[in-house]
Length: 210
Length: 210
DNA sequence: ATTTTTCTGTTGCAAAAACAACAAATTATT
DNA sequence: AATAATTTGTTGTTTTTGCAACAGAAAAAT
Image 1 (cartoon, each protein chain N blue to C red):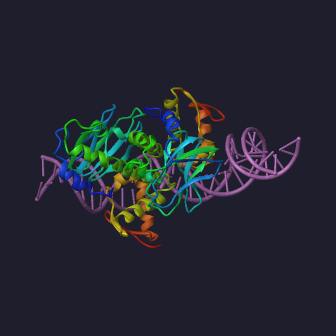
Image 2: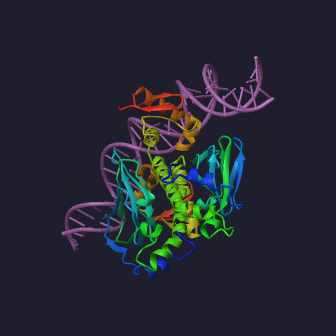
Image 3: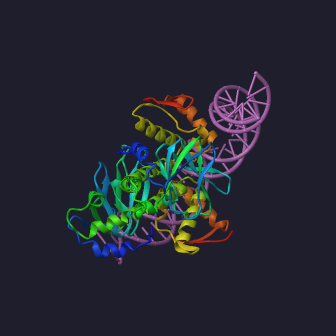
């Protein structure tokens, strides 16, 4: 995600200005938070990467969302309707800033610099989140693995302003993200290479004009 | 969508209090708006129903989102990254209230009652929108037509607090919404009936304990 | 009231995806 | 540095889905 304003710089400056926020660091595979009951927790990923995942009855893991630096997440964004619990899992050593939505919506009583400013940016933050979710829906609504892969690659390419880019996942996780079988996806990747759509070295992809 | 506050009543009271908003009525299949370039347009559906749709190269129609009374939509929520144009199409006679996001984010210079109040509720509105999008992602990430159907039915059932409910789509549109082939979906519906998961009379579905 | 259009329901067949199982390569861990 | 664990890559087989084509029902238009 990239914003019109420099949220990274903003957070750097303000992260310690209110005692009602706190930071915590998580190691790989640790559960950052789980979405169970309605809490007012909002989280910003300061460093590292994390996934929002669900495990269904069949034991399939679904990566609902993937977060990287400066992404915002939390239960406020996700009214639970299903019985299944959702987890945010750190994919590597990650630092997360926690704060309460109450202190954004109403005013933080602490008279701090942090919350009013965040408040001001909060709208823009969630509009970007919506854009992100819409893109995800567009990906998932593609009818074949090939189309999903190519759409996703185009997306990454557009973000990087380059025909070459790195997949921010392991291929195993990419399959869960696109909600397809991993081996079927591998087969399709192979075909895309053979048919001259892409080149691939490890997680580095280059889109070719076909 | 249902909100904690009565947005319907709010809109009824305030819709005419600012000259910077306007209403328009559309007949069935008319294009309400299209998402092309970055405009500040926000829309609320006062009456009727409408779909956000896209047509891809293969001529497939994808129903990206489905709107009913009091739903909010507009380009602000959707940064266009693909080349494809998006349309909002009225599914029946519909009335839409248009206003500008500028008048929410900054203050409306008109000194009206409408915009400040909307401002206040806007956060909650978009948080509900996010919840909706997340549910959609959960549906689309289901790996089979059967799972998609059952998840969607469970959702409708939960919303209505009843095992019986009406599909708010034609079956043709439902297939586009779940992003599956219509005939394959019909086949699966038939199997679900035969195997005692559901009963179905027209668009009325009842979930049975299996 | 009749015609036209859209929607529902079905089916055979082809194509695509999932499942399963395994070897090789890479990355973590001790 | 050696071992364990995870990820990548591959392929045969089964299952599911998409495609195509059509008839009947329902809804909309004239």
